[in-house]
Length: 293
Length: 321
Image 1 (tube, chains in turn purple, green):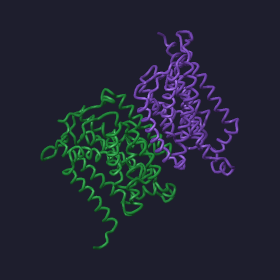
Image 2 (spheres, rainbow over the protein chains, first blue to last red; image 1 turned 90 degrees about the vertical axis):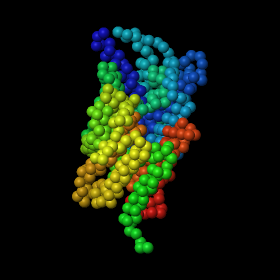
Image 3 (cartoon, rainbow over the protein chains, first blue to last red; image 1 turned 30 degrees about the vertical axis):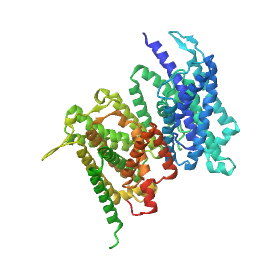
Image 4 (cartoon, rainbow over the protein chains, first blue to last red; image 1 turned 45 degrees about the vertical axis):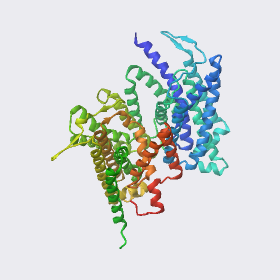
């Protein structure tokens, strides 16, 4: 077969990865940007979203779309609630000290992973896609659901952007990010804002997870790769920069799709990780970030 | 009796600990002697980590690569090149120093959160490399070193490292050497300058210290000790696999040091021992040992940020090094 069809397929797959990745990375970036907390458990919130989606969908009979839609609403809410509680119980008591919070979120990672393994089990389970339409492209048919994932991610991203820049809630969040103490002096309940942002970040990861389970299966170890990839995205995009995060997600998603179509995926991951480490060493503000942070 | 100086007291304490561990070789039942041998080797790993994290304040999330460099440096030379144990152990140490030098040189350009992520990523690259070169390393499945290669040659004869008693004594010797080295280091002016860098890097720079060179030296020494632990693990337990390069083995020394007490000489040993027995006890009741690791991590960071020995030092024995 010619180069064309492979390339188109790799690009489409890359775009799906990019769409999901930018939602996950957006959550990580928000938490880091506003709270200055590196949330190592972020990948586990994603995994939890997928596992809950499977559980919710399996409760509903009938058309698969019903279960999926309920899961798309319910699973992120539950994950956000869990994140909220974790923030109040643990992170807030650590006074958001960077090193202590990393250790605590590592602890959280192990706890969530073990809970998933104990109650969900080591099997990988799929969720049925809400519809099975195939779109005819020049060389092959392509799942319309995957294209819908890209579309839905764009809507979610626009919504987040709107909330951040055009609403009172967004203003409060940005004020807290800009100067925590001054915000507090102006009567902004910083603690509640932090808890809300942490919950929102986890919720975004869960949305991404629900979108991906009809394509990949839900598994208790599925959080590892997205965590690393979204770290990479957030760093390349510049920590805390929204536009950079999305740009970097598209860049990483596309190159990951294309490189792993033509080369070994292990080699692709190795080179990407090394490249990002080097970026962080020589250009700590990221490729698209502003200078000082 | 005259009052002992803190220096005499601390040396007496450390000699006492090593003697106690020596006595345990003859007192412990077989199973627990095996556990202790493993703990002693891994405590060296934790002590190496402690030098960077506890004393110098460099929170690395990538120390698995130094441990694995030692492990593979010794394991691969024995398995593929049929080297004997002494040169293979040397190769492990050399691999650790080279990796530490390269990683330290690059990663130390960053600080704080960026340093953690950079070390995490270098370690991930190392882990992926062990998977990528699977023809030599056999990846996750790993290599088992045959028993006849695991003998330590001496002018007067050979020691079979797979024998439980020999294994314990060799592990204890390594532990004692590294403990002595760390004790010497942290009491020497160099160790004091590392602690000072941890407390206030800017002031040290202003006082004319070369902060970068001091930190690089700390990373290299830390890498050397971790590699020694890895190389010893390979020859004593005869197994080399990618699992030891994975992120979990970067988290574990952090956990052990935090539980035992960061920036204490004996904390790493106590932390490693404590966590081994906590997991051992927990796994006889439940298979959910990751849960225990997670809960202990959160519990320690919330309620005992100074760890076991750190709390003892704060409350009762201020002279503990």
